[in-house]
Amino acid sequence: MVVHRRRRVVLAAFVALLVSLGPSHAVTAPDGGDDDQPTLATFGIAPAQATVADPRSFVTIGASPGATINENVAILNQSDFPLPLAVYASEAVNDKKDGSLTLANRDELVDAGTWVTLEVDSVEVPAQSPQTGIGKVIVPFTLHIPDDAEPGDHVAAVVASLTSTGEGADGTPDLELEQRVGLRVYVTVAGPTKPGLTVTDLHTTYDPGPVWGLLGQGRTTVTYTVRNTGNVRLRVEPGTKVAGPFGLLPATADGAPVAELLPRGEVEQTVVVDGVWPLVRSTVTVTAVPGTAPDGAPVTLDPVVVSQGLWTVPWLWLLVLLVVVVVLTRRRLVALGRRVARQVRAGRPPATR
Image: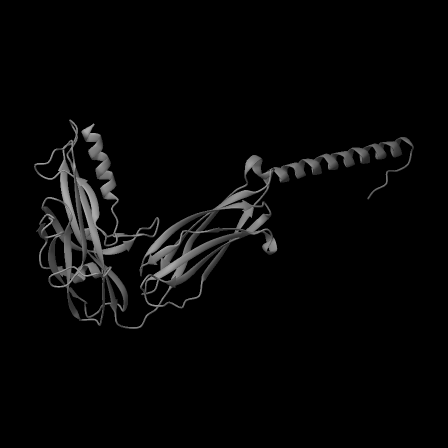
């Protein structure tokens, strides 16, 4: 039973994303703890001055290429025992499935995460107490913007991480659990801003519904990729419309809004549009409306619109129509054959048409 509980905790922790500044709550068994009674470890990270945490939600830096900026973060511990935590730099990326901000792998930093240098790589954060309040350690860091840095928005992160190990079942390896919380560091490099947005990889499929569309409306599944091709953060609100010839009987569905699409970030969307009539040939239109990201620079950019034709064929109706045509044609041919036969028997040449 203990092994099963540990496995669930590991799976929960590995989906930890780049979060806001509230403390991170995680279950762990520190050295000397009772594995059957895990202890609740609560830790977090926040912007700070030289000696105290401050009320900012995240670190915001605006500077020119080549600039060096000194900042601080506070590593916080609301547990009743000291916590050994690793501290390292990272950078924010968009999760391709839902657009949320998550942390890049430590060995895959290619942008602002490489600009951050921390004074230490680990800290021992004291326990909280009634006398001293929340335990904390102030960690200074330096951010150096390269001379050739691209103008616009970049998002680094400073991460506090707690790692613990649980014993696996017989014949299985031990389970390593990393719980982490990250503080976003928004960096705006001086220079011209160039917002840009594209919608690519549009694919559509049509399901005619019950009994091949004989009973009415079907549904269309639409997949596409929204990509930020500019150098500023964007909010994106996508929508999809499916309409018949000349815009007849349109059906619509909203995509999942992306609160913060980073430069070079992309999100894959899948939208199901119900209530699509089988009008033989329809048009699928995806519209992505860009806007200003939270606390970002104002953006003025036209909506991006892409369209694609789609066969929405009522196959069963066509089959019924084909059967009717065959039956009527056969009846006409039979009647014509009988008329010719009568004319032949009467000694008159058959009329031709």
